[in-house]
Length: 275
Image 1: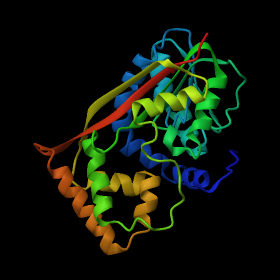
Image 2 (image 1 turned 90 degrees about the vertical axis):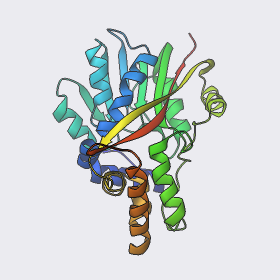
Image 3 (image 1 turned 45 degrees about the vertical axis):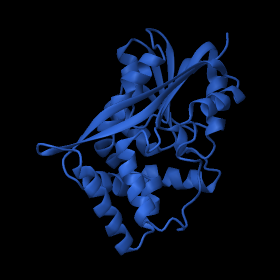
């Protein structure tokens, strides 16, 4: 069982244990769209050993395996690990902490994280751990959401919350949601953990998320997430209704036939460990 050391980490762990099934059915149709970009930027090749950190349902591991790599997945949520093992029984998934990886130094050719980094209380510690378990010449690749000014779907939720939420409710404080989202600050942070900043790839990718109703995005945040869900759970009913209505209005701008096609943008970042 993963040992949880601080309040934000406990908040995230308890949340992901609770919503693991909902996450897979609600968010995976979006987050999986960025995996090909991550795999390509990290130059995954046959026979490479790949560590999929914060693996969730295991889709990054599966994509690496399809290319002939040898993946291992790790997640601090036993519920997520159970889902990954059920969907992909041919891949090894284990419970473990991204900030204290249970692997020997220089064990992997690649370390990947798809939207896991900023759910951690100490993302730089996770970067340091990735550096340690990588072999010389290996690469660390991860994705993070772009800031609202670059991410239309994210802006819908951000604007609704800023306009209508009580932001002073008691939610455990974690790292900025937009840490690493500025290229040069990202480079410096990775260099502090030993990576070759000059090797860094920083790409912004945009995908389309097809959702069935204007309320889907709000319900996804409320019922299948953790950090924003914690904020929403602490709102009065009037404030929550106002956030819901504002989110629905934002989604309606992206109507296409009987669906809603929301543009969502994320950064794909890959950096090398010097030989």
